[in-house]
Amino acid sequence: MMKIEENSLGGRAIRRLRSNRQAMACFAIIIIYLIIAILGFCGVLPDANTPVTETRTGPSFDAFALWLGTDLNGLSITYKILAGVRTAMVLAVTVVGIAVPVGITMGSLAGFYGGKVDDFIVWLYTVVVAVPYILMVIAISYVLGKGMVAICIAMGMVSWVGLCRLIRGEFIKHRDREYVLASRLLGANNRIIIFKHILPNVIHVAIISGSLMSLAAIKSEVILTFLGVGLKGDSWGTMIQGAGEELIEGVYAPLIGVVIAMFLVIYALNVVGDALRDALDPKLLD
Image 1 (tube, helix red, strand yellow):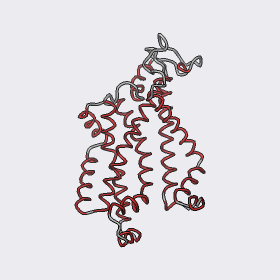
Image 2: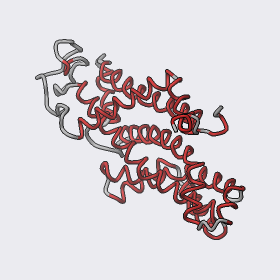
Image 3: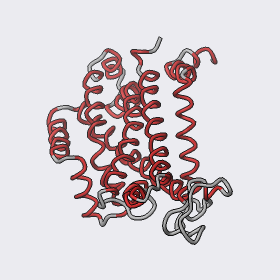
Image 4: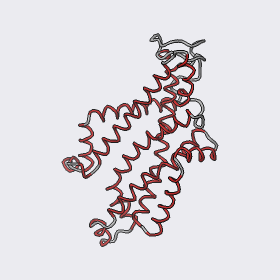
């Protein structure tokens, strides 16, 4: 039984991932960010909006809160970055949780049934992508009333399109293959064919797209907040927006800290996404 599992598609994919040290290191970084987000969401981390000094101070190793110093209001830069981690990861997970199911469902229906169903779904995502991504997110979030929930829903309502296209194409390739025709002859209905036979063979596309979707959500939120149309409060975009005055005064620690934090998670998601593509694509497996 163990040999069968080790020689399965999933077993070979796991072995390939484990052999990629860079991908495993980046995966560990993502796990650390998720743990920080969970701790922040549960209220375990210190409040980033509570002053720790009376005025601005430079970086110091006297206390964890002072590693990157404090801003003009005495707020810990380290705590603000950790609060930004919570915002970024909650946003990424929520957007993926909205967009991936929608993309899989719409792409599966379009690719499997074709005809009018396909025409309608293709028309729908064509309308969505006709408006630039950032403008569409801004418009939807304003309609929903701004805030974290509004941004998450807005990004989720727009981000499903790319995955839908990929899943649709995969279903079109698979729906007339021998194993699907054999299932029909054995009496399998459309629901069984879609979810039990075709979807497991194309689900790797959704996993890869989800990792890339998450980093796109993080970058988009930072850009929107920096432009003043995103989140208010605990966000890397807010920190970058407020770094202008500090740079003029020669204070670089806040900007350097938030850039490094963003770089690590975006780089890690990119590497993990590429590794998942190589490990999960059946054509690339030995």
